[in-house]
Each structure stands twice: as structure tokens, then as C-alpha cells.
Image (tube, rainbow over all chains, first blue to last red; front, side):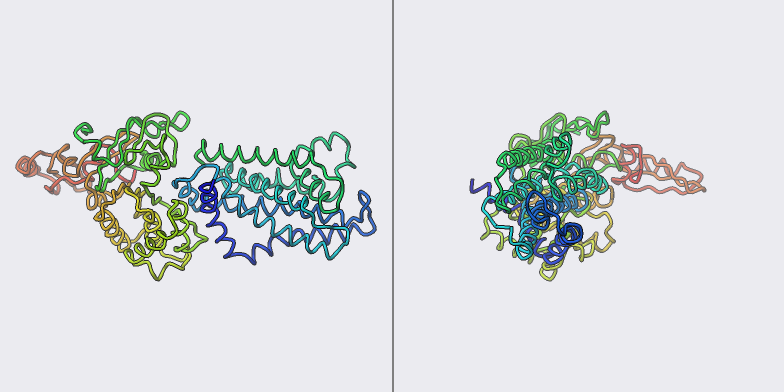
Length: 249
Length: 292
């Protein structure tokens, strides 16, 4: 077990150094869109609106936290891996080292997880000043970590499948952008027709939003969503392992 | 090409019947290859002949359809991690992490090779001194010139003291001075016992550096041996006849006397009698120029 952690650390070390070089840029970049969402939807459109029994601002902040976990974790992992694999070629260097495939996959998620957590926690702390309805609970934190891991693994998958920077952009437009607006970030999925609800519950961000919101607002916790999110996490991990091992990406 | 005369125990790389297909296209067509411990082995071929695919197969980066490869006695399919500790690779396009410094690239590589931390610092200092990299260690890769980038790549690849180094077209894009410095560096590595496997399409490079050379064309090895052995395969002396339009014709002879006799019988054009070189072998055996 110790050797697995050592391998994961060895893979993640370069990405953490990269993050240290660019810390301020990274934090600034990850905070821009959540703050814009907060201002535009939370203050601009949500004044006086009540959603699921709470003021809209209190409703939307956990949603934006969930959305940030997707954006920050996915894009950090996907962009860096895509660049390393297709442009620098440095992913090959990693493949030539005596490291288990699973350690490579997990090691490459670390940057996305760390960046996702930093971004989400900053937004959440900001939210604590804006509304008294939010609370920091262990189950909120657990949900947040699981969301960051899941979306980081998804980012890895898209980077491993990408044949060019263009195909990464296509993945973002076709998969990530619809998730941003449809998965319960800005409104409750329960207000949609049932057929749409079924479709949206097949997407991990919907479950991440449900869990993070319930954890932050002290609502009854949707354990099934947590299990579904965990299942997505395992599925993405296995797909990533397959891609690294058998496709010699 | 006589592989049976080589004792496999003397070889750091033993590849047998390697076949690699991309869909219906055969990139490497059942090649056998032995690379002896401590030699500089040159792998020559025109563009698209299969050089890079072969080097990627041998270094575990690309799967293959059939065959087997042993690196220092370890089957790369059955014992990939053991084999990986024995080799390093410097790819044609510098594959270091350009967001990190030279020091960080080296340290990262050492960590990934699972070297103990105490050993890493010592080894890094050793290499930095050896390759005079000291003042460049804190610079990001992208801020280095082409020659120093290659040097940084070599130093990083050497961090875990591999027994064999693969160099894929190491001097492409370098100016003459940087190219010569790199040749010195390759000789220096080899002097310390590291086996060098390099692909190149610079004939001069292979002629100057390599103990033995393999020529690959259309995925098949068409010649294998020392430059002298290859020359003797087509004839040790060449007669080059250049006509008034500048077009040259080549004829090869086993000895100087026959070559001179043939040359003196030519009545028109400029005649040159010289020793056969690797470029002659290459063109004769592949039917192509190096650039084609």
C-alpha cells in the first residue's frame, strides 16, 4: 500500500510544482466564472425568489460550489494532461517509468482535486458571508471531495480520448457546457418534466449538486445520489485505467 | 545480416519477429534485432520506414502485434517495470515538461523511477557536474536553446542510470556546433558503458558515431552490421561518374584496382574513385535517397 502512495505522489509531484508556479493565476481564473454566476443569477435575477423553501442566494451557492468542482477539477486535469500528452510528449516519460497504471491514473487526478477543493472552498467561504443558511458539515465536505475526484477522473478520460486540442474543446462544448446549465446548479431538477429529470439523473453533476446542496443547507441527505456519484467515480477510474493500459495513449 | 553469430547474453536488446500493424498498414514487418551491450547502434532509414515505431516498441511506448522483446533479459510484456528501469529515451521532439525547470524535470523523473530521495540528490549533482548543467538548472525548459534542451533531456533520461538510452533523431533541428557537442555527449555516455540506440537519417552521424548500423526500409531490416561490413556488402570502392549535366552514376567494386580500371575506361564526364560510405550502402540497399 505504501508503494502505491509513493507512486501516486511521484506522478502528482510535477503537477503540484506546476500549480505552485502558477498559484495566483490558477486561483484567479477559477474564481471568475463562479463569482459572475453568483452576481448574475444570485443577485441580479434571484432577488426575492425562494427555491425549495430557501432564499435563492442560499440555494444557488451550493450549486455554484458543485459547478466549480466540475469546472475546476475537470479543466485542470484535462488541460494539463492534454498538453503533456499531445504537445509536450512528457506523458510518454511517465509511461516509461515503473509505475502501476492505477497509480498513474490516480496521480494525474491530484492537481484537479486540489484545484477543485481550493476553488470550491473559497466560493463556499464567500457564501458564508452572504447568507446565514449555509453550514460546513462533514457530509458536505465528503460530497465535495467525491465530486472533485469524479470530475477530475472525467477530465482525465477526456484528455486520454482526445486526439487534438480541438477534440478537447468539442468535448467541453458537448458534455460540460450542457451539464453546467442543466444539472440542478441554478434550479431544482424536480421542477422539470419527469422525462428530463430521468435524463439529468444520468449525469454526475446532478447528483453532486444534490449532495453538496443537502450537505450545505442541512437538508435530508440524498444517500442514493452519493452512491451514484461513487459509481460514476469508479466507472471513470476503470475507463481511465483501460485507456492508459491498453490503448497506449 | 547474421543474427545467429551474436550471443544473446552479450545483447542488451533482443527483439524477435516484431510485427506492428496500424489497421492494414504494416509499420514494422517481422524484424529481428540484437543490440550489443556497450555499443552505439544506429538505426537508419528513410522517413516513414519504421524507425520511430521500432524505437517506441522497444521502449514499451507502443504495443506490437507479434514477436518478443527482451531488454537486459527482461521481457517487456511480462516484466515491463523491470525493463523500464533499464532504459531511458530521448524523443525527437523534446518530451520534457516545459512548464517545469530543468531541476524539477530531473527530480520528477527520479521520483517516478522510484529512486530513494537520498540517492536522488547525489545522482543529480553527479550528472549536473558531468554535463556542466549547473547554471541552467533553475531555468524552465522553454527558455533553453535547442542544444541545451537536448542536453537537459539526456540528463533527465540518465537520472536512474539506465543501461540503454534510446535517442530518436537526436540532432534534428540543431545547428552544426550544437550537433557536434551532442555527438561528444553521446560518446561520453557510451564511454561510461551505456548502450546507445539511436535513429537518424543523417548518414554522416551514423558513420561517425555508430559501432554498428541497421538499415530499415518499409518496415524491414535490409542491412545490419558495422559500416565497414555494410560497405563490403556492396563493394568497398565506389566509382562516381558525373556527366556534363551534373547527373551522377555510381558503380561499386570489391577492390581499388578494379574500381580504378573501370574509372580509367570512362571517356566522358568527371570520374571519382573513393571508398564506399554508408550513404552509398543506404541508397543501394533501399533504392532511395535519405531525404525521400
